[in-house]
Length: 69
Image 1 (cartoon, rainbow, N blue to C red):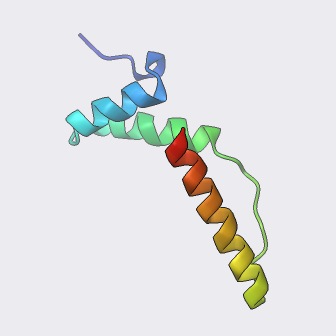
Image 2: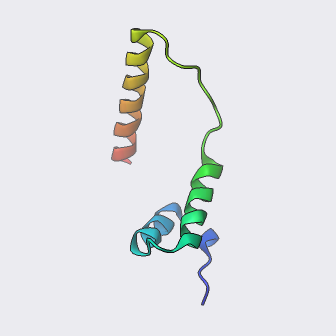
């Protein structure tokens, strides 16, 4: 029986991949899913120490938000 990765939720696909780390088809499905849903927004490089600190703060906020979900 062939597994249909398209019908799996992100969590199910990730759990499957953790259990089957050598399944290249699952890996590619995982990467395709997350890549297709990723934002295509790009930003210029932070140039000043203040901008670097602001970017670091935004990353930390996002990480905290992701952990709480």
